[in-house]
Amino acid sequence: MQRLYSVPARGARASLFGAPIRLVATALLVGALAAPTLAHSVKNGGLTIDHPWARETAQGQSAGGGFMTITNAGRAAERLVGGSTPVAARVEVHTMSMEGGIMRMRPLKDGLPIPPGGSVALKPGSFHIMFMGLKRPLKRGEMVPVTLDFARAGKVTVQFKVEPVSHGGSHGGH
Ligand SMILES: [Cu+2]
Image 1: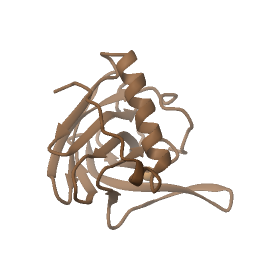
Image 2 (image 1 turned 90 degrees about the horizontal axis):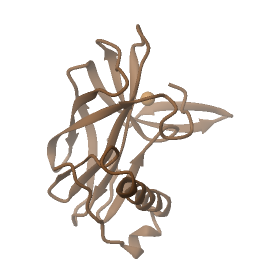
Image 3 (image 1 turned 30 degrees about the vertical axis):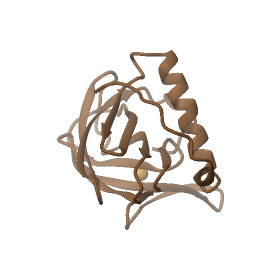
């Protein structure tokens, strides 16, 4: 179950969500070259959750960020609406954007849409899930179970690998 698989390209949809799809292609390629450490993914029906990871957190830190790429190979629209994890009081789905020169994040009330035939990258500085009310620090190298809630697919449990803050490029402010 920890294997990558190829996602068919969908040119028509790529024009709508071009950047995320290109990012996925890059991530899949990098994952394949760097196997097996980066090649953790979970497939659930038409959904694939690729390279789920969380940032390590400091002692006393109350919240942490989680990232992954979600691909929807099905024909129906999907939405990530929330989740849960034993290590935090709750899991929220956040967006992050530049407002007046400051990066701000807010919860997505209706969840994060995953278009049919498309992919969405949750990454630092952009969409992410947020572990609110951390019960303990997230330690580099450990795997943290997170149950993601999807509007159609329901609950999908994924192991998030805890990585250093520098992982995944640009920093998003948590
Ligand atoms: Cu956040």
